[in-house]
Structures are given as structure tokens and as C-alpha cells.
Image 1 (tube, rainbow, N blue to C red):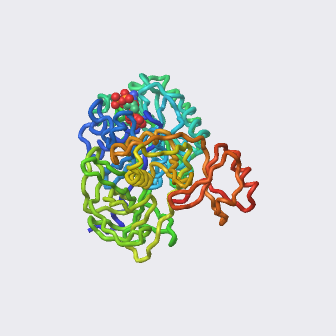
Image 2: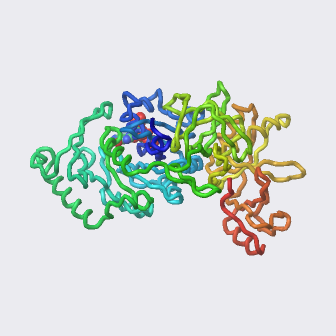
Image 3: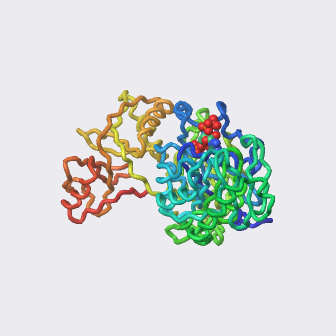
Length: 530
Ligand code: G4P
């Protein structure tokens, strides 16, 4: 029987990131196709029926045609257990995406070959950089006219500040797309028609030195390929697995997810180049999944009311070490009590399945009776350590929120607190004329709509919002936390967060510096610790 460590070694957990429309969903779908989870492509996302099947939990997603929530998918391939953390494409939900990246060991970045690096990719990439996680690049849509290959690589290097190393090289694009050249094996993988990807497609390899290649690829394209490869070999970064694993070099692959081309090649290289789950930092030092026998996990996402019929709340956990079994008891460190981990689930497209066991590297959803918060640690270790917190990102938009019906204050407070616990919004309190007023801060404005919608639908509370001009928030880090004693600027507001910690809101960035100048010893921080 395989040991817990043997199981963990087969885990590969990555987040898939892209600017909307670059082909993230299509690529994910093709991975599942190769993993044997889907029989035909299109089950995750087809035309009208299942456009958002992966995360079709909220009406608002359907109405707006955007994906609000992230989801987790699993498949097995060649002895590996792969967990894909899908991230919402809409830029307004970047905070959720950031947290998802905390649960991943590496990221797959999908870029549209006709567009290069786009705004959303840049933002997400910054977070990957902050965590130093490896990034694998898949340049997609080569069946359409793509930008020049060198320009694409240059773009990634300049925009994202990371060296690139193309593992393969495209031969033409659009109507003249002929396939990719593998720089290591010196073979060409010929592009074949897969009827828009509904079938797997033959994988036809032919050595570049084989004379018969001339019958398959036009002479001018072969000549161009040889020139480009010579140039790249001479000037580009060399393949260096260590640098890839350290997040310093991004291996680049070319393909066309829609037509299945290059997907399997990418997947196989990815599985070999990426690592099993690595040690994570806790307040008791680094916890190594290859040494720690006990189960440990942290909550990176909370999703309420995924299924309206059940009005349930699920805490998503990333297992960091050991083995999980359904119904097991463990210690909830932040709650300082023992919990039973019940109704464990994994997501498979639109279906949720109950699982019996899972291992370090896996992502599971646990029934949450309202006790977990983002960043909490759960473990069976006697040493009740907690994993490094997940940073709270600074909201950039603020509004004062009140319930229309004063009699519904209780439901309003319950709803807004629960939604804040999920991390979708941040709430702050201000004292105004003896009344506690609620100020909501969000990273993206669409979250205001989601808040109003959810309060109405899930808590039966109508609200009105008064938008506030603040754009900048600072937590007070120094021991000087007596708000009354702080001399600020005229555009500054003093508030408290849910945990009673004091903080300052500013209309203008520059007021932060002025406030620091006026208060000796005051220390302000951009991120509130979870
Ligand atoms: P996203 O999750 O990153 O937002 O992108 P998604 O996979 O939904 O793909 C966006 C659009 O790009 C889809 O077309 C999809 O079919 C198309 N696409 C994805 N990969 C490729 C590719 O390799 N080549 C080409 N030519 N197109 C690709 P759509 O018309 O918006 O959606 P649908 O109606 O086809 O589902």
C-alpha cells in the first residue's frame, strides 16, 4: 500500500491564470479530456447550456455572464493527481484570485498569441512573483494569426519581469500554422485538424532533419524556423530546471487549446517540470509534507450558499501535510477547539462529489457551520501551529451601507458579517452620532452589486449605499493606536475594522505621507493581517 508520502509525491496543484478570453476555460477543459474526466470536450463549457458550469453558483454570474467565483477541479494523468484551481476571469474579483494563488504550488499562465500580455495577466503575475511560485506559460490560439514569436517572448520578459525559455517554437500561425518544433528533441509536432478539438488528434512527430518534412511544411517556413531557432539558441535564456522551480524562468509552450494542439505536450512537460507540494511556513517553522505525518490544512476561501436549496457554507482548504479522511477530528487553531471535518467535497465541473480521503496538495471543501475564517489552520498535530496568514488586500472603493428597514438590523449585520468572513468584502465601523455605521470596502466595484444582491436574496435585506470618495487605506501598526491622538489631513477618516483594529481612510494618496509627517512614531501598513 502506498504511504502517505508516496501519495503526496504524485500531487500537482496549480492555479490557471489569464486575461479573460485568452482560453483558460478551453485549456482546462482539454486537460480534463486528457485526464479522462470528460469524454468529449464541451462538457465544462459548451455554447448555451453550460457556459459557466464550472462555477455556476450565483445568479449574478449568469446575468452578467462573468465568473465570480473560483473553482477547483481534479484529474489523474499518468500516475499524477492534478488539482487545478480555476480563477475568476473578471478583474473585479482579483482578491479572490490572489487568495487562490496562495493555495497553489505553481501557476499556468495562458496568453492569447494575438494579444500578448494583457492587463489582468500583469496583475496576477505580480502576485505569483510575490510568492515566488513557478509560472508555466502557454501561448494559445496559434490557429489564429499570432504576434511575432520574439515579440511575444519579449513582451512577457519586459511586462512581467521574468526570463523565458521556449520549450517549443511555433511554425507559422493562423492559416499557415504547421505545428511546433521541440527544441530539445529537434522534432516537429505537426498540427492536425481535430475538428475543433472534439477528438484528441493524432500526435505526429517528425524529425526536422527528416527530408520528408519538406512535403509537409513550405520551404519558406522551414527556412524561417531555422533562422529563428538559431537566433533563439544564441540569445535566449538556457533551459534551467532549478530556475524554473524557483519562479525565475518561465518555460513557454505554444499551442491551440481549441483544436487540442500542444495541450498534451504541455501537460506532460508540466508534470515533469513542476514539483510535488513543498514545505510551507508556519509559526512553528517550516512544515515539510515529506516529513510531517500529521494532517494540516489552511482555509483559503469560503463560499456561502453555493446551493440555495441547502443554504450551506463551504470552507475550501488546501491540505499541506498528511492524510485527510472523511469525518476526522482535528484542531481548529484559530477557533481553539476540536472540530469534525464533515461532508468533505471536491468539485467536478458542476457536480460536487463527497470524498473519503485526500492528501497533502489536494484541495477540499468542508461544511462550515460559520466558524472558519480565511487563513485559519486545521491540524491533527499536537503542536497547534498555524500557517502564515493570507494578506488582506487593500480595498480601493468604499461605500457607507445601511439597511432600508431599520427593523432588519440583525439580519443585515449577520449577512454583512458572513459575507465579510468569506473575504468578498471588508467592513469597517465608524461612530457617527452615537450610531455604529458600516462602511464597506471592496477591491472591485462589482462586489458592491454582489453584496446588494446577496443580502437581498440570502438574507432578505434591502440596502442602500452611499459611495464614499476614499481610495486609500492604512492599518495602524505602531503601538500608538489611540485614534483620537492622531492628527490627520482633512480628507482622512478614522475607522475600525471587524477585529476592532484602528485604521485610516484617505481620499488622496499623498495624505498618507503628510499624516506620517505630522505624527511622530506612527507606523502605517498597506495590508491588514488576516
Ligand atoms: P477564458 O476562460 O480565458 O475567458 O477563455 P475561454 O476558454 O472561454 O475562451 C475564449 C474564447 O476563445 C472562446 O470563444 C474559445 O472558444 C476561444 N478559444 C480558446 N482557445 C482557442 C484557440 O486555441 N483557438 C481559437 N481560435 N479560439 C480559442 P467564444 O466564441 O467566446 O466562446 P464559445 O462560444 O466558443 O464557447
